[in-house]
Image (cartoon, rainbow over all chains, first blue to last red; front, side, top):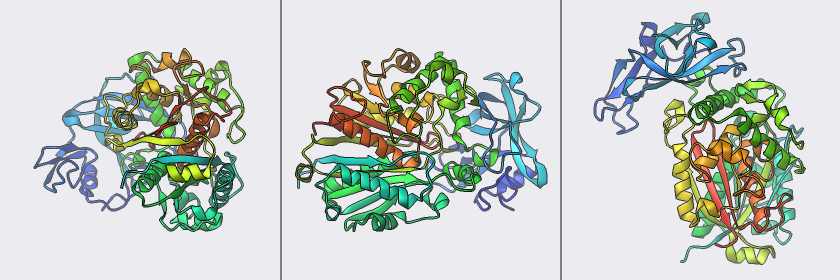
Length: 137
Length: 393
């Protein structure tokens, strides 16, 4: 199992961090941390960009993040036409991790405040596809 | 061997917009205009071709495009014949590479050409190809990809932190569309009023129709050579490449290098280097073509290129400091907002305008311009490329 069913449109099927999908199916959004230099990464990296070590471990992105910015997508790219409008948000978590994902559909634009607390969760999409999204903390 | 001094001696672009022509047709047109610009230049003088294009493999189904282009324009390069892809900065990357080769004596006369054919019968292909320009595994799968949402976030952060207004964004569009109104090669040759910009259909708020560059077909080409050969080939004032820089500081997949999306640390890194290399300061620049893919971009570029203080880009533009009669004139040929943006060609179009400005033959001339600058940002702001040109080496 790789990235075939990831996102509304998946552009890559094979990647060394395919376990991310297994964990996502099991309900967890995971990041990686380098055991050598301590660098932590989302999107997860099977090899550390800082020290290039392959000695990395998984950890779950838990806890509250803060909304840094957002945008309402009215015109989706090809493959996303039926999803629009949707809201993309940039959220900062501990350990310097920053995640771009959609806001859960029950959060409307008028509910949004920059700096608001959000948490990240797996999101089931149509046709057995899967992604992650932000919910109210 | 002493380092050779490198000059840009000629340039040309074709009509940009929605074109019923192939990428190779468009490249040939641009090359023709470029040859016409330097009558003494013979095809056999050219020993290098660098072709800048990012979408050629997708929308024109042409990889390894450089030899095809060389054949079509009838040149037979013997030093270098290759393609370069840095999306929106491709043309500028080509000029940097040509400059290095000529300085080192590995090439003598290089044509840098570039451009895109983006309109195809299947319009969705263009929007699908956009996803290839980002970290598509992650951000793309979420439905990020087309540039307006990203630059909308950038604009909102800048507005919140510094009080930048929608009127200040609009002032960029009004200035650049006015500058492009007499440019026969621009995609849009019509000035717009502040009211028209403010009341235009929203693309992604706060960005409206006139805050965004369009999708464009087109090509451009320039000729670079060393000082001695330049003196042989042209009687016009010589224009030298004084300094170059290109910086990327990890901004794919939202791993942003600055404090927020309005803080362009990678642009400052490139600016620091290029001004050192060119031995000039921001206040020495008479005319600049900066990457106005969106109005907010030009405002932040004024700040992080050092033309005004951080956070003051909005008032700087609104008060006319980036216009004729101000501190420097920016996007004197209309910029991306008027000319459009066939990615690989944009840096070459900017070089064409700076060449004309420094030789005193531009349509909208900055009197006595001696130092010119071009700037590109690439993709969803992952890289910045700057060149400085001067009448003196």
